[in-house]
Image: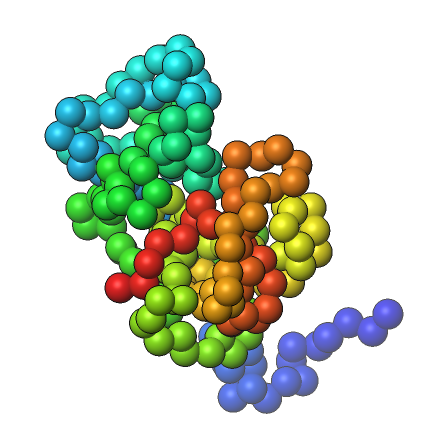
Length: 217
């Protein structure tokens, strides 16, 4: 193998190579921005932390008003036996807390100084659903729904049928919008999971979990 003879390289070219190479080596790879998982408790009485999304089960801790919690990275709203929406947390203790009844104001808010809602920014973690390309603009109206970024920071998957294992068609980012079909109805999950599904026609046709939706604002 023939070795490179530096004495044969013009001085001007050699200076370019030596000044550029360290910068290329030192430049780190861009890191994916994790979703904002910090939430602040807005319920004035605080929240109980339960081992499962069921208020009749063992309480394993509590969170004071205005204290912060950390959502689980794979957190997905679950309808409990009491009809309220429950969400999994990992801190200050791992368990489930209530986010109130569906379509209510909820018991959580973004932490002070957090990025808050970012409708135009799709999730950029490997666990998040890939956003649909060229998402159409969906206006406010009775069929407009928004992905609740407070409880679904990783975004929402669009499926081909009313089942989690069904074909994945695309995703909607946290705080992104979907449009329900005109004669929509809530369909219970056939697998017995405590969630319902609804059919949408935009940004693409498919089915999404109702538990992760709120009215557009």
